Length: 88
Image 1 (cartoon, rainbow, N blue to C red):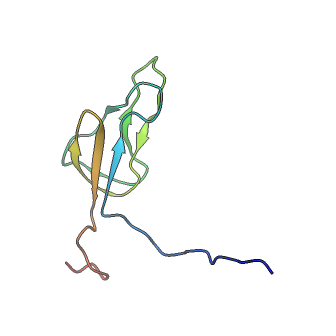
Image 2: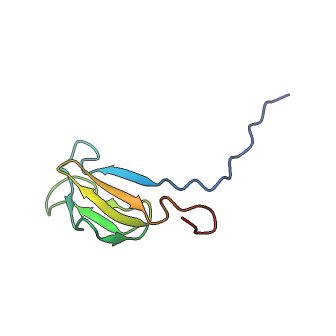
């Protein structure tokens, strides 16, 4: 008999994410958003300069750009701090 683990189908939504601008051996991406900007999941938030090797960075959650540093972009979820049903 084989052990089978159930698939976790919970809807995980982080309150914040910190996305590194340097994803691998290539050049770090350059932010194309400003602190305080609202972004949607999938939006381009940092781009590799023309002619450089690297990875464009896209928002993984919907939220607000909380901080941009030399190394990373932090996004805080728009629903951070809300309880189920949208109540704070």
